[in-house]
Length: 231
Image (cartoon, rainbow, N blue to C red; front, side, top):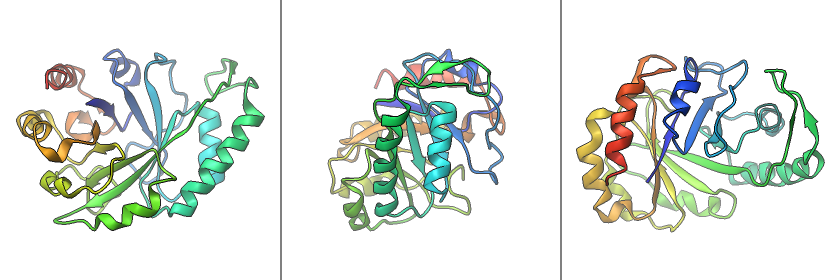
C-alpha cells in the first residue's frame, strides 16, 4: 500500500525526505492547515495533491497551474458532473499549457508538462455507508477516498469501522483515511490481511502525526512508514 501524508504546511521539505508517494496540501481556507505561499522543490517521485472543498472548477485549475498539482482531492459535495467538468477542462488546460513557461511563487520558471490529473473523490463514512452512491463517480474519478464522517470535511482524528469495506462493490482503487496514527499499525496489519483491503491503494495520514497543525513529527512518521512497508 502506498502512503499519502496530508496537511502539509510547516515542514514539507523534511517530510519529503521520507519519500512518501503523495503529499497533500489543503486549499480550503477554514482549515488550520490551509496552505499558501510556495511549495518547495520536491522529488519528482512524489505526487503533489491539492485538497479542495466545493471549490469552483476555475479555482481548482488555477491551483493546478500555480503549484503543478498531480492530483486533486475533492472533500465536499462535488457531483459526478463536477468531476467530469474538471476532467474535461483540465484536458483543454493541458493542451494550452504544455511546455508553457510559468513562474510559480518561488520565482523559478518551470516548463509545464502535465500528462494527467488524478481525481480523488472523498466519501465520509460513519457507522454504515450506502455504496450505491459510488456508481455515478466510477467513470469520472481515478480513486475514491474513505474518511470518517465528522464535523469537518476531513481531519477529525478518529476512525470508522473498516470492516464495512468488505461490502465494497467496485474494483476502483481507494485511499483509506480517518484518524490513522502510530498506534494503528496492528489494526492496519489485520486490515491488510482481510478481504476489505483488496482494492486499498494507499493509506492517508494527517493529524495523528503532528506536533501542531501542519507540522509533522518526522521521527514518528519514519517508524510508521517503515513498519507499513513490511505488511
